[in-house]
Length: 198
Image 1: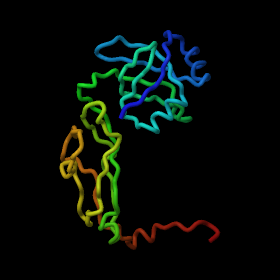
Image 2: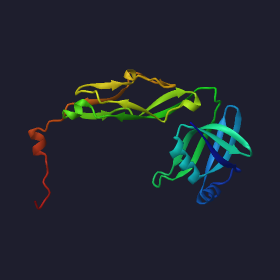
Image 3: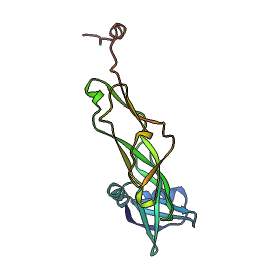
Image 4: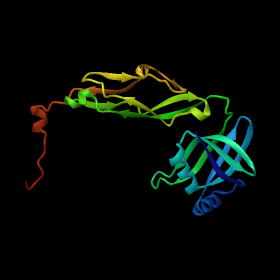
């Protein structure tokens, strides 16, 4: 997927000036890549958030600056730990004819047969690294777990990938599994604490 974002050039400034930029609704950012020198820019906070919600984090973003449109991928979004406000973005300028690697979310789909029988579903893998041409990079990969019985799991090697991307990493990594329900023992019951006054 492709999207257009307008950015403005900015001079490298002290941290106090960057804070003022953020207060004005702009996010300091940088564009870098093999074929260009790093370029400091700003992007409108509201427009950036809207674009990501609409197109996804792994879309190709054309950054329009001084009449040029630079194809990029979002490499990093830095947020404040407490407020979750974005305070810096890194864009990687890419060649649309070269494959790139990104992290894609793993989304479990369906209710396992084993869970319907009382088992517990555990997800072990939440993201996976994938490789694809820039305009084919997925934001997420759906994994159907509806067929899992108690005691069964699903590995990366079990996935039937028919898309335009390739999974990078250990195919023996387990994505999810269904385990037997935990049976309460007498010891567990003895350890239950009743609040005072009851």
